[in-house]
Length: 102
Image 1: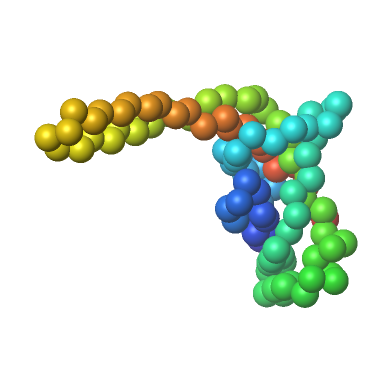
Image 2: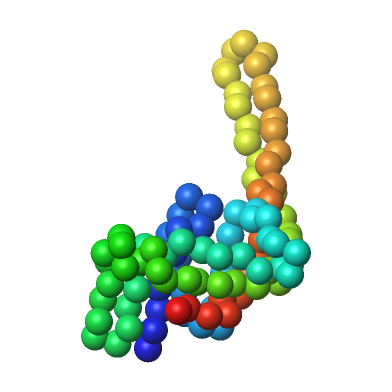
């Protein structure tokens, strides 16, 4: 089984061909494809971690859709001072499917 660990959106994701991953919002090219940088490649018993060898590895993914994450409520409160603050946040996400690792 061939899989790779790629850097995406400040995190690392373990992917193989056909894997669907949700990442931070990524801009795709005109064809809806993106290329993710590989940090580790495992091909059966062979493990590649060398930076020079990994520069040749291409992990290509296709953008399926853009979406927004769940709403996160941020509340701050200080007792006896009348201070209250409420803020919401929804992350901008992109769902991608890995098409090939070569």
